Figure 1 (cartoon, rainbow, N blue to C red):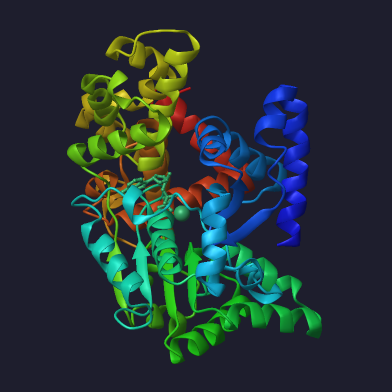
Figure 2: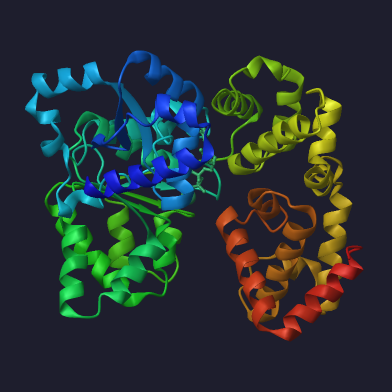
Length: 457
Ligand code: ADP
Ligand code: MG
């Protein structure tokens, strides 16, 4: 709480420099302290409804931005009137300043969720319905219906968003619940840094003291044996005491590589759900939702523009969102009408390589396959076969890499050219070659030569 008062003082200073003197004196000068910090919100008190509304209409975003950029804090501000604050104080001790002050231990547990990742803002469609309904059930009865909840899918499809919905929902119901969101690489790093006993005790307490653990991108535990053992123990403790665990990953538990099987098998103890790529209708719905969050008047963007963006960006939701933002920015910055032509212009550099998808003929892929097999002196049949000798595996991975980087086809689609390999195999191959290009000059040269032959570069 003290911390937040300090932050508020600093923000006030900024505002004083930023704003007109009279405006500042009118609006912010009277706001002296933070009233309470609950879940993801910092509540400050305005003297009356009029000032409250002015702050909300004109300055709230600015305040949140200060918090985010200056203090790297994910809380958001909310405004109450003095009357409301007084009523809360007299109504319920529960909400009084002292009681809502988080104790030291739980301080870090609050507010490491992104408040905008809630069930309201998560758009449901065929590709994520099961994941969504499972997440709601878990949020409703943490620790009971599905433990752990294991969500997997390609990048940018909403895994982190959905996992945080669970946390936000639980906190909304009970602000005293200790919900901890952590990225797996952060977990590993903290564990590695906790070498001394004192540090380790702190680390251990932090993780064992939670009611809900949200651990994101578990695939990054690969090859980190010691962290795996530590996570295994943590899992046992939390699971054994019915504390909810939610895990996300880029692949199913059984496809996780270099993670001990006693751990991956436990990931399947609860419920496993996947998230796939959204279809066109779903993408349109997502864009409309994002648009409402971005602008006050979403009707200024015609449907055709939305449909255009949705039809071109079919790969992942993050790109889809990025494309929308770009169009909004471009048309606003250059004062252009929101129409399909201008959207095309705004997205030109992003769309060109992708628009190949639509016109891509199978011959181009066959061409890549035959160039690669010639280069490595193997037959195309062997190249696309399931034979596992290095002689074939490596060229196969290179071919997958080339198709992905040149034509940016979905992993699943690429798999169909290789005897219906599943998407994770293709993904893994592309990752592997990407790494090898970094590490091995010969591989880099080979791939570059092949790219030239394929007509790229
Ligand atoms: P992942 O963790 O799977 O890589 P994220 O959860 O980070 O993906 O999602 C990427 C972006 O797409 C986020 O901004 C998220 O809000 C948005 N997003 C993904 N799926 C949805 C959805 N179903 N509804 C609304 N937004 C979504
Ligand atoms: Mg994520």
